[in-house]
Image (tube, rainbow, N blue to C red; front, side, top):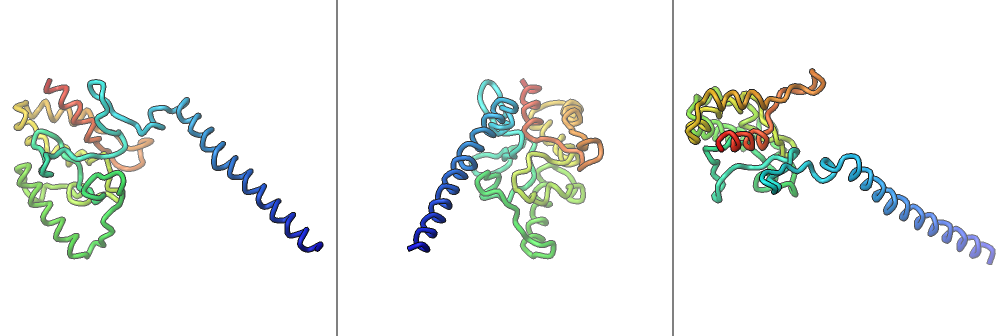
Length: 202
């Protein structure tokens, strides 16, 4: 009888602890952190949305494609790097391809991309930078290298009937330097660049 009473007391203590921790960690803590985020960092807490003309056109943190209904890249826009997330830039399927450097599928994909990008931009295959050929680990990178952005200047300027020098200056103005001056590499946010391009083009 005593052992049954002891076991019941232990179960009751465990149940109360579970209920308390569920209320504190499962309800109160998320609500408090959400409230702090909404008050102190509302833009970041809501997904860092980018708006244009009063409507949301994307996120500063998640890349997107600039292609037609068939998935073909649009010449008038700067293009992002390849994406292995779902069918491409699917935020619900963030991932890389996980192919190793000697994987024949990766080698074939890189060769195909090099040829397609060189032809699309009217440049030599040897001029295509590595970030234009490989997907990021997340598959959602919003940035490209300055070299890849500069590579696309001629094609974008021609498609929009703009002076190449003006488009090149726009690219240079959108280059973000290394974090803290030494971490990472300079980058260009493709959505930000394309928004500025649309404004320049009227």
